[in-house]
Image (tube, rainbow, N blue to C red; front, side):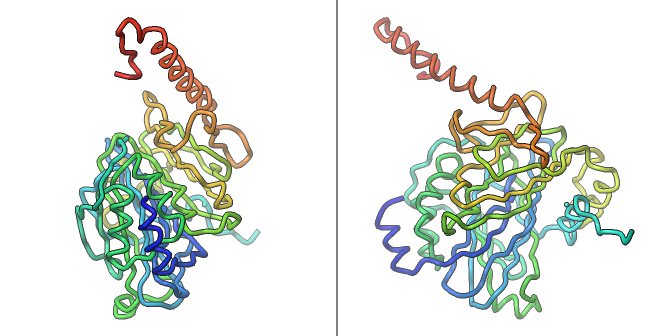
Length: 356
């Protein structure tokens, strides 16, 4: 991001962020807080990334506490949503109950985009939220945010650039406290939203959760995945563990299907429940997802290079997908072979596959 943008952000006054929201999003409910100074905070919430028949449904809930006029959040998306609507009334709560039941007495790859301005693709209002879907490069999205009253933290240029290299699609969500008061919403009340995103490359943005945080601040979030088959998962650092990785129960799927807007839920799906618990400085990666047996998780979608690839482990430390590092190493080997081939054949006028 250009230095003038950073200077404008600092001059406007960077917001102080003390809490985060989790995505899914498939990702999302991973959003970075970007708003005016005040005591409004974005509290820990739950996100569902459901992938079925080539379509991702990203359900997340925005919860704010504190006092102030407005505050916003920017969330990177894997592709352009066809719809943004209010989510189910209790879908996320039902998922939370599935993994942490009440106690009884005896929880698309895109090339880098160089756009100096952001294009508004969709605008809508959901309760006290003003939702805008944007397409643009890091500089364009940052300038749009500043021009529309968002205040960016000093690390925003680097983080936006990290995501714009893979996908130029972002969602900006602005919370209007005065409208929330008119609607009778109280501090801590959540507003669930659901994005329907056709994509062949689902991923969950995690790095955005650390936006604006000090390096040693702890990031905590819950991420649910629903996929047609058991997914393969690839991350790039510590702090992400799997607590549940199993076929979703028929009772859970029936309950979800009966909620508002959730009739698309099929009769069989795989449930994965993950916890993020890491220092902000450690969270410099995303979660790549391969939702079928025939696919492999992408290093690009995880925002990492092969040496940084990590197992995503169960809560007891067992690796869920032992092939991850092997696949990553294989990619690194192919890249090395491609470079070697280029050196051998450049004099013959042959263009290796990696440089076509």
